[in-house]
Length: 218
Ligand code: SF4
Image 1 (cartoon, rainbow, N blue to C red):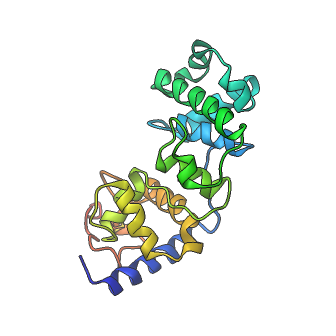
Image 2: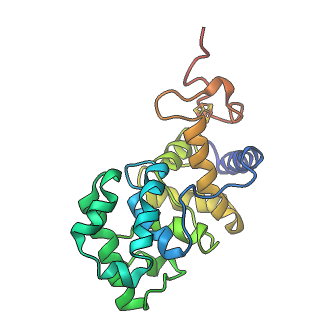
């Protein structure tokens, strides 16, 4: 890896350019309350945000809060979120998380990472999404896109998401944390694809250590 100053400089340039490209960005998941975002984020595993948004109106109409979902029949929930895949596991996660939330927090979603991750079915990535998006708190969620970008841009040499999160935390000012993930994610979807990144049209091309991953067509 390059020296620390170079990496820090690169990280700053990356975020500056991504901010220019995506001046305003937030999760594409539809939600009204932090609890709804928590539920939607759990359901979003291994599927698209569009798929999640196609089932949550019905889900939240029937079970509008943690108290309601905590008392839901698993089979009923499974039917509603069936089309998002892994519906058994996801139903179990959102119902048990809601029950846990009722039992320990009176149905209120905590605004603290260490507390959020103690909820059943809530991992660090989900907790960070909710903190940054619903509560506007400093947090960096590391998903597959963030992981790929951080690697390609030489901002980390770790593979473990938590260690990548801590590397990114070190590179950015705390006030910037909540603006990192969604921009990295969107850029990963739009340009720096897993298989064929569009390097020849990439606005990070001059700072990326792998500017020629995909040659221009023709
Ligand atoms: S130059 Fe290619 S590998 Fe580097 S960030 Fe851009 S698209 Fe990704």
